[in-house]
Length: 324
Image (tube, rainbow, N blue to C red):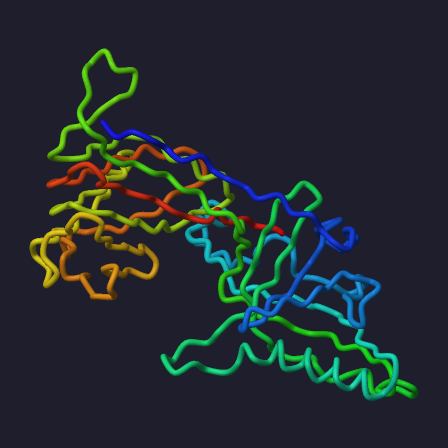
């Protein structure tokens, strides 16, 4: 049997400055992280820019479109629920000690937000990240793209040493993510005498049966990282019977050797070796179902053929939530 399940770890956050009360979420420290990784504090009231709490919206539950069918006896019956992209309204005050300082801050923040609309060489659009840190140490994030609003008030006395903008930020995924991942780890070990207090596994395969708990509000789509040696990898969600396998011997890479890795992403479907090789043809299409995890406990099993000491499987996901 497999050995160790890694616990969920949360790194405490020491917020500086202290939390500020924000509509829809209460007291929190909020930071905007632009596509370059630069962190812009949004709730430091002593800084040259900070969020105007009045007018903030879009941080609550995700928006939905409901599809229904008329019922012959009156009313309707719900047929489908579709979560929609989220829009966040974010008022921001910017100031400076003089006009030059104000202009520098205004331009820098405009660039930090609009940089999300600069397409990359690979065709992707780099999101910014809105990060909400609570006094209890929990941190949730959401990817955002600038939509509109960096215009200023256009009133007398504004635009000299201060001005404010009401940003509209657009979110592809309406759900908030936990900044800390949940990691479930299984690996082989050397065979031991039955009197040894530690469990052991066969050197030929890892067979894992475990219950994975998703503490979030909605489904998550995990990433699997397999460390060799291994030849054939199978993952099954026991409550639905959904499963997929990766046959390494059917790929251009061949069997996974000692210390080599392969990463399986379930959303979007993707299989990459540690050196970047595309191994998606090794999946058992069309039967393969790259299943997700609903909220709560889910029984799963996974098996590695050709395993030996050092073979390991890591299941990784970030819980997703309706609100910040």
